[in-house]
Length: 377
Image (tube, rainbow, N blue to C red; front, top):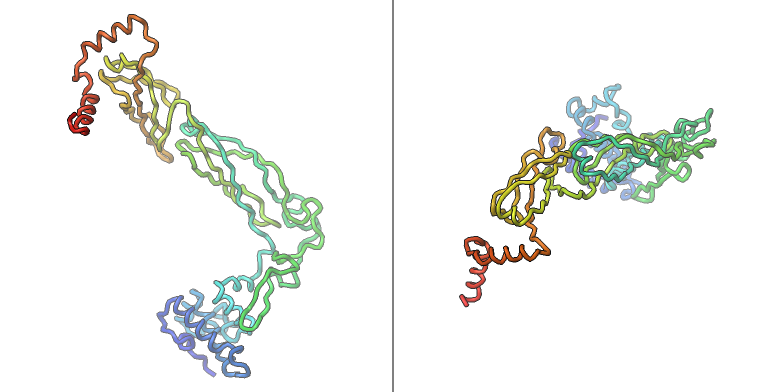
């Protein structure tokens, strides 16, 4: 008997999307499922035909082969899915129903498991560095407790000279299934706890886990220009996997210590420098520190006000993965003298007597606006 076209079986166009295929399959499977048509052999045959069609078309590679060669793509060894396309058994069909309704989790159970070789967990390490370290970069050593593959059993978990055997209950899948009416229920294999393997003679050193806990010393290269919150990934330096599984990764999270002189904003640095009232009024210069440990001379004009900033190009932080640098900003903070001597007070009083509004344009303007605010009174 000639096989019907798979698209005709699912009642969709050849241009149907994956979502349209899935929707059509669900509708047809629910209609023709044997539980809804007890004793109807024609319905059971059609149900098998629906599953064979969807099993082919839901896979991009199989669909491409089918579109090109038709049913011949899966006959006489031309394709990898010939046996399923020709006549899959009811357990496969039930699994397809489970996959369709529950997101494909059941489909993985049909394949061989990884033999219990689970990937190790990722680890996190918090490291605090100085602003100078972030400026210049450094190589740091860290000590971390982590799980390593057991050398005695080479990570298998079995005593040397023996090896794990495939779980007889789940056939190595790690999961077992049972049908309840229309639904296929899946749960972790109670014999191997989902590993797919059983260790009859566990390793004396690791107790069958395939890994042991030790403290390791690692070197971490911190590049110049890192910022607070930067994450550095060390591939494969995390926790060892169970029974020879791949190791996880180690993530280094950097935080910067507060600096006594500088505040950072991206690649720019800010330094608050107190200057004498006389220097601010008359103008002058002073030496300011730089993050590289050097000094730079800063000139300020007469009449410098508190809060004014002076930009020093290229004196900031290096920009990560770049040859450029940010800038440094000197923030002037005018310091008012305290504990005046009698002569200093007399000089300031004489100076105040000679002051005019032109000497204080900002305060004069402010109090003029205050006067207007209160109606000119």
